[in-house]
Amino acid sequence: MGQCGVISSKTVLVFLNLFFWAAAGILCYIGAYVFITYDDYDHFFEDIYTFIPAMVIVAVGTLLFVIGFIGCCATIRESRCGLVTVFSAVLLLVFATEVVVVVLGYIYRAKVEAVVNHSIQKVYNEYKGTNTDAPSRAVDYVQRQLHCCGIHNYSDWMNTHWFIESKNNSVPVSCCKPIISNCTGTLMRPGDLYPEGCEVLVVKKLKDIMLYVILAALTFAAIQMLGLLCACVVLCRRGHDPDYELLVSTGIDA
Image: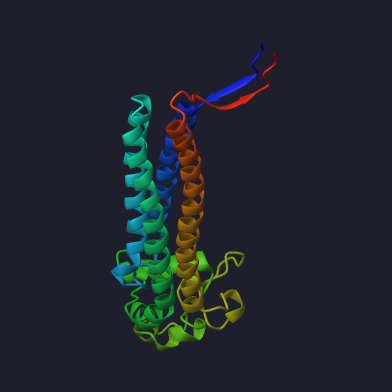
């Protein structure tokens, strides 16, 4: 009798636990990415509650790592009670993640435009044109990264305190297109400047980040549910047949 491939139920469960560890790492990475990205735009979006979905994702990732560790220990010790407890916790975690992150994500995604509209004028009015000033660094960073100038367009700079006080009829050099050499930001050469305003682009960037969080939560909830179903199949078959040890056996020749 020959046997080409055998996968034990214990091996399947170990791989599922390793999958939960991988999911935990990816979710923590996503949460960290959101924190870092929002930090670059925090002057334009001062609502700290926006961080809640990212915080939930990091918390879920951490809990998944713990559950994966407990699951591995229970699998190695062949503790059926431990396995049932672990994967039941995963089921609750999946639904909690999907409900909390998705709902909060949609709530705060809808608030992005209103909050940015409220804060962006204040940030531009606080611009001083120095690297030591936080609002100035934030404005210059956004204009360079998003290729924009002013709130709606470059003419908005004419209403700022910095423009009035400088009296040089120019906007910050961060408004200059990178392909233009020796650009000084003068309004005498508007073709050298980015034509689009920053408000729309900042709103779009923040909404895209929140959508990324929502989609990540939904995707991992679906994937983890598939893993949970696989685990349940293994546990149920072991429960009905104590002598059952092989999940898949292929290529058996008499």
